[in-house]
Image (cartoon, rainbow, N blue to C red):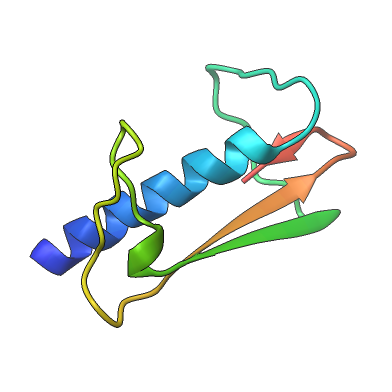
Length: 82
């Protein structure tokens, strides 16, 4: 369970970092939308323990030999990211 929490924390950091690197103006919607049947692109972020940092940017290495992958599926026609 402890390892899972650290992996989730690492993925959260990676997701935040990848979202901040996206170009353009972002808008948010509070309501959920249905998942599209197709996607126009896929962005994959891979993380290793040495890439983990806390909210202040201080390195907080994760468990040795762990890896994390997060896929952002994008449908630019409908402006949906899953």
